[in-house]
Image (cartoon, rainbow, N blue to C red; front, side, top):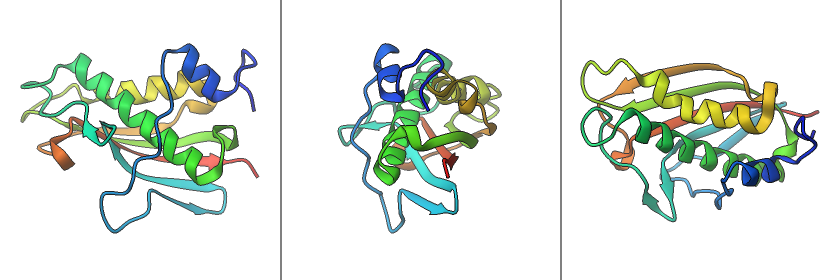
Length: 159
């Protein structure tokens, strides 16, 4: 399925100023994705590029809502790379089902939805209505590698 403007998904990413990175390697004894039927479960991805964290520390201390939003975009790009590695093409995505977002933030931080919008907005910009999803956006006191954000995603694939 092409975007509503006729572009494929990777061309749409490029138009938005993004490039799909290589799929990140798993950081432990787990798989980056698991397919069951037409659902693809994507393990949590953090804001890492070229093997290094792009954003570290807590929102409300070392990071702002804006930089947290940008870190969630990096997570989204890594998730898209994992999807492509699993099924060969982003064109195989029928729709996004669920996004679980985690924000490394100070105690009492209440703006985690605004941070995780970085991922959600990117998915909708690239996939249109098929990028809309159910979601949780929660603040936590720490994430792997001291990253600022992490997301988990479930997508439905084409039959």
